[in-house]
Length: 349
Image (cartoon, rainbow, N blue to C red; front, side):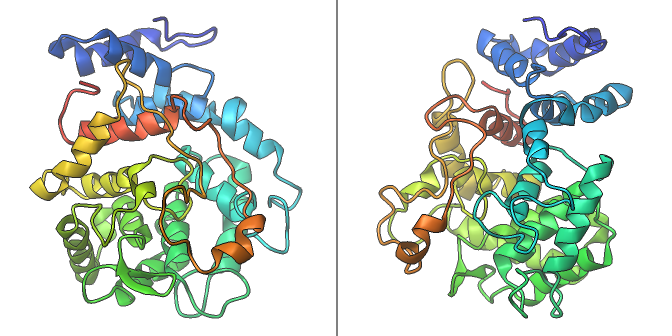
């Protein structure tokens, strides 16, 4: 497959990197197809992330790929709906409507490789940070005086990925996560203490530079890893079907890929207690090396008892998706291949 596109000057380098990644392992057509698909120019955000995380591209070629992110595709579409003042939908409420307002768009952009090197991002990200910062050190929506796990973890994670790891408010958010961890190593979620759904703190620490961790942060991460590994990343009460389906964007919802992402990024993916979740992820891989997006959030199909708030708020939830459920997903495939690469396995097998 020709990865060059019309204006790509780095084809030779990328071909060499692909060969280095897969050539010594008798590359399959599925592997070539999956990597070629991810590095197509139609979605420059995915192309950049695949170059950085799968192919190990560095230097000018990676910088050029990053600069191309807003030029077309999903990021360009999201940017097109950004309003004067740096917000989406409503400048007074950055959280609602779910899942189209500023909060949700910024979370998605952080997962698409956007950083504050792109000038327009800083205005939106800093407004979001300042409006959500709470006196107790974490983050929450503007109508709350105290912080909430979902907002604190997600906002801190996105701000780190945007390039704000040294920001004072971001640092305070990580300290808040340590203080509010439950004795069992989990965090609260919607009034429940220490549950798998309270994953946002772990994903935030997974992207926070290790040299910035304090002893208490390291201890919190160790407790959190143990909490998830004890449960095999999936087991808590009766089977919950949405955890077994793969989604993007994932907002504040959990699934096996979310868990595998942070547990492997934190260096604990080789723990035997993660083997079942990893096997389930591999089982979902198609013969062409791609993964499907199983569902779009909010995903409550066969979920058992619905949250108490759901009947009241279900009409206010406006699903947002970049790809179609039931179809091959570039974002799911990219994220799954990251996990497998961290495990030292052929990508894909």
